[in-house]
Length: 305
Image (cartoon, rainbow, N blue to C red; front, side, top):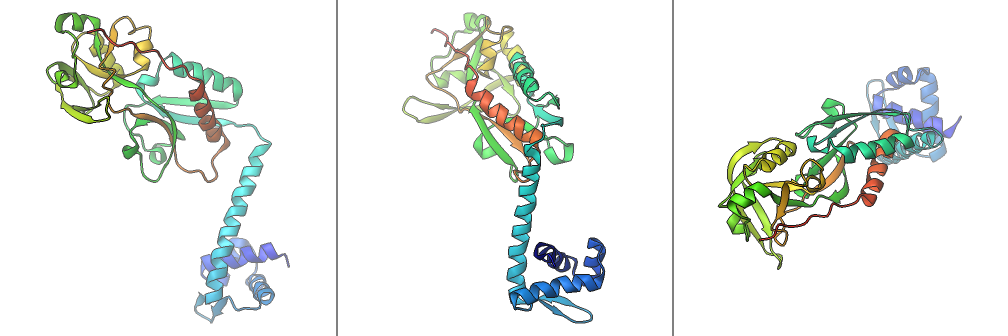
């Protein structure tokens, strides 16, 4: 008898709880299932199972052998799946979730390059200003901008790069109200909040942090909306570096207090598991990490006081 087959049969007997149930799942006769288990016991020279007419239980050696066999068979299955993808092209529909402010030229350029590399992958992008549930909503991967202590439990989070973020104002607002010269002065300005933001944590030149309360006058649920409100002169706001280089905003928006940076979030690729990772997801994750290393960081020039 084939040793590997006998090991698989033994595992199925233990997981099924009986020889009859195992035989049904393996499409073998109960007598053949019993022969496979006896073959393993004969080869090892130990009894693995305690059997009687009603119950089935593992002996102590059987418990050890079962755990080792399960690990070996799982590793073998994973290796076979990985090898099976080496000679094939990445294909299929890749469902991605991104923040709404990613819906600009930079992501489009990246997806165009990804498309040239992987023409058999259909990328289905949703722009969501919320934390999607990858499993419940059927997403393969999400691009999430967050802080390390806010990463989701039970998921894989691959770090891509830090997102430089600044307090911003429009030139028109600065003409009317002037630029704050210190973090404390931010509290005296009108502020366009995003989400539940009601304070900012600044980091000074010596590394000392200071939390400043905000006078929120308008609240948006998306950064794209915040950028438009700040550009309209409603008040100050916090915006990632990408907005200062955007052709729509670059003549209007000005970063402030660049020598007192606020806490910086990080872009992560979040997906469900490393085990049996489909080739389409692995290709996209590796591409985004590589693309981020080549991505030009916009030059941000602070406002003069």
